[in-house]
Length: 440
Image 1 (cartoon, one colour):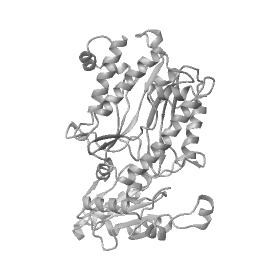
Image 2 (cartoon, rainbow, N blue to C red):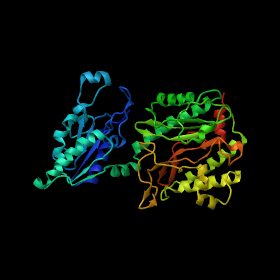
Image 3 (cartoon, rainbow, N blue to C red):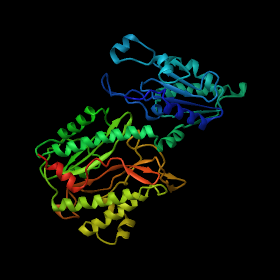
Image 4 (cartoon, one colour):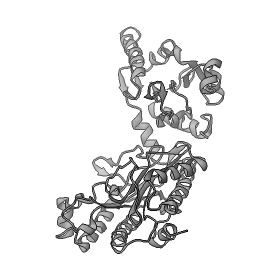
């Protein structure tokens, strides 16, 4: 389902990258290493997002080189060779020819030729852009070649004098999404919406959280997603007060709240949606009161998303609504300003209200620039996800409040004149949620 790296989008990204590092520099980008699950079984391979962003190439054991103005080619790839025997076991490889024909490389070589060919590019470069720490085995090989090229500087007058992390440049580019990226994200979100609706309808007392996780996985894969973009959270009852609960191994009970944080990945792009619903029932009075506070906080926070606003603005808006709501219910005491200043709310709301979203669920990009909260611009996508979490053993609140966890999360695109809730198809009003949880 991945796009070919020979497409216009990938060529444009490489061009912008070369313009950013020119003149006199070379960027060396490694693929993600293969990870072993246990024994001789590997995890399902997923390409490094930065590497894919520039190349569209999905295979491991690969290196991309960008060298502006180099006479032997500005975009060079090192890849695994074609190997009929190995391909019988693990599938077709692009090989050297495929790297050029299908992925747009000016030149391509087998990965074993890295030590032979890469010095041609390093010896004429003043700077090398290389992401240390991503692939430790490759780090050793590349650093050895960089050191060699550096030692030649006194003789040749050229060669690298510094190593620069290229991720600063790439991540800044990834913050604002292109139309093709938004298209992939919309598909991931549409698939995720179907999964959440399916889960609300299926969840019943006596079922296991793991069964609902299976329903979500089914909805993802049957609709064309590669799977979840992060481990799905299916947290019933008191488990919902654990932010990153992923065991999903408890038996659910009718009338409890069920918090599901799950998003599909489609063509390398993530959705990230959270919904909280009563299991096979309608909201109780207390559940409704808590839910309405979180929903009000979320709606007001979403309204704060617009060009020119700061990234922190939705959080500040949501926090004020949550604190006021907790004061009204008697969960917190004192003035709102005092509660916020002292951080007393953090017992029940301990995370920020959003993060960037894109190829990674917690996507790349700075949140602060020159010490100030970043200004939102069209094309940025962020989550808006306030919540309230009251642990089952919290003796500071009445017993009826204990063991409740509620979070509502949507993915929001900053547009030229405001915002677009990209995940609006996932029900969250009380009426729409109850229509699903009580459906026969």
